[in-house]
Length: 433
Image 1 (cartoon, rainbow, N blue to C red):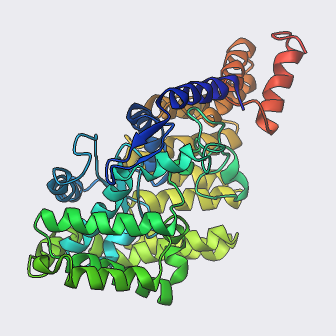
Image 2 (image 1 turned 45 degrees about the vertical axis):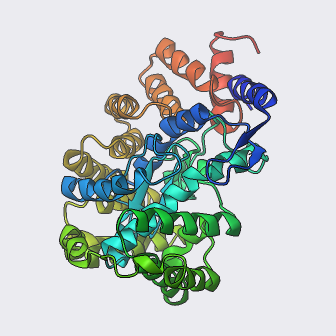
């Protein structure tokens, strides 16, 4: 734990000692709540951009993102915390999931958008995530110590994001521990979020059958294709009970809303672009699964097939670049990463991967430029600072390298990178041993 981590936790602890308990916005009951609403929003603002970038950024289909935003915004006025800074987007990741940060920054993946069949199911999905925000599930679990040990403002970095441990990919491609803020909800949390989601969606005019349809999609995937949805179920426990509860609630408590619209045609119209490349997305899912298993050659084949179907898909190009790095082919990795950043220059991850490839090719100045570009687009990743130091050192710029290493050690104090940076600073006489 760094001094900054300790000071933040001490501040939070002091606030908790002062506030003690707070009324839950949904139940009205008092509960232990160390984090204030301002803390939730600050955590969200700092960490959510790193997770969205780890998921290859928001899709470039402006119309689709605006559509998802419109659906989400139609429900905010019916929530228990309508003033929260909610935001919505579809990210380029191909695995099946949706998530929210505690301030209301939400994402759906392309994978889950392809599985749903109508707008009411999308409303159920977003309403469920809103339920987590409104019931303050992440804040409550942090306050009771379940996440406090791993979720820290400015926490030490993970070397790999989303569990990636593939060789060269772990050399700085990961970001800060944003994913830890995506709470592993309990079954009780999920039940409450389901109930709140159905309340919000029906009040905004959607059929309660949308939540039933969503639960049916998830339970069928759990039975028939569990590997595609394992990440979602790691944070959102699924059970037959959730489906049966949705069926019962749709027919009873929310029976009056069963005849409200599903808006299937409108959903299909707005997701037509995704469905046109469904085959490519499925091949990316296959390739990513194979990479997690470190089966890089068959992964390359699957990703090559995906890129034949969608040659300018940012996530496909990035997955191929990472696969090439893991196979120790930096020249090929550079090709795919550079193509990806040309296609989507505002998204940060391609710059980082391109920098890693160039570093392995001894193109130190070009590597530094890419890391610097990444940091300008997405500040807060200590791995980038470390690699900027490596690049400067390789160019013989000791003073500049020392500045980067000192900056890195201001955030990260443990691990091989920290030991290396510390050793260099001692060797150069910048700090005393």
